[in-house]
Image 1 (cartoon, rainbow, N blue to C red):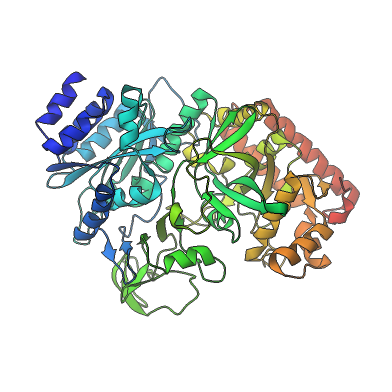
Image 2 (image 1 turned 90 degrees about the horizontal axis):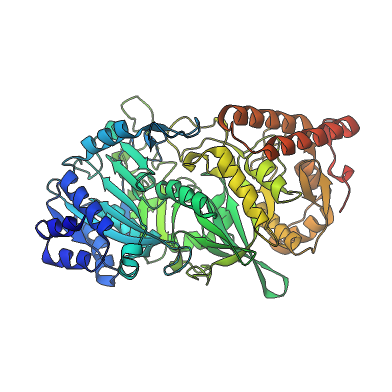
Length: 626
């Protein structure tokens, strides 16, 4: 191990050597030395936290053609390959030793076999290119929440994305020295084509080695597959949290303003393209994060931080009317990376932006024109459904002042939301912590969307919106959540939302902006300022409270027929959902705690009793007010 630094002296520039030598961590030096030996880069560039180094990544991404400058100052666009437009479940796998076992719901490969495969793909992958060494932190620096991370990549686009999405960590590594228990990522875009995109997507692999806390990624550029601190590191921090007694969650964090200048912090778990970022960005509220949160029990309180400091958001349907804050930053000077949108005369266009779109331009397929088809004869859209924007949270006018607070914020509520056309209410509150974790979190159901490569529109259970990322047994993960609530003097309230409920004609019963009312109702419930009706699946709002909130929040008339349409209990559909959930748990969560089956059985009994008493459609005012 001590020889690693000496070997680096002979392979890298004096500047880079000095910067690495200033970090007294033999494990780090070994990781970097082994990465250099494997990938064979021509040069190594080590980044510090200095503004000059941060800017260098952006400039290099542009000069090498990984990003193209746009008409608005600070804006650039990056294109991923046509087969590299989202998180790729099929080739993202855990490296699992023969002595260990993960849930069958998790994609995995035997560790030694997987290591041999990924190392073979990475071998010599950086010849003629520069290896960029980045130091960052998950969570605020110098905090109980902090997790130091290092990423070695040959993509300046990836390095530029790290600038916007995470807090710099070179000084943190120096401060921690040998105590830096870090996560590591090794990424290579692999062979590139003339458009500077990965040319061999069929050789794409993203493997997670939880024994060494290392992520390997090759032959891909899409940020969800290459920015190791995103969902890839989440898989590792879940294991770390499991060992240390805290929670790593796939959740946004937001501050909701209440009466008398009160602010209440909520977290929310939504699968991709289910309204997560749009909820976190509601106008008039504040945002701490839109993707990954850490929770710790500190002095009986649930304290939370954003693991990240930026947004890698889906841009589809972002428009001036519905998303004024994001729209402003996407149309004003400042640092923004667009990906996989249409470019015409230096301006970006995306699906659902609400303005006329040119019939030609440049996109992820190259020169594009209306009616252009791919090799299979399918028409290529002008922008991808999973096109993205990357921005730093600090540049948003509604960024919460506690973003980098090392103590985090006190969390008062948790929301679970998915895509459910037939069963769940638009908004409801659990009876208690245990009921919420099981009946909302462990029962979260959605439809697959364009954010994941594969077929869309498939109904599936997505347990707590974190199922793809759980690197411990799913039953253990549920148990950890249940136990965590017992550590708190006052556990956060748990809610469920469903923005996608449809009527018998197939029309949505919610409008896009209605979500703001549900969030305001939650804030009042947390502080005991409104009552609710006790339905079989949870507490639902009272009509009079919603009527007042719709007028106050949206200046909109809320009618009795709206309330009935939205909050009539659909008993058969909820029973069918329970059956799907139980089938999933029987197949994939064999080690589930007893509370799961008990709480689901109680929910079924309440639903059956409601059906016997009120029929298959129970009017919301059948249920008592509490």
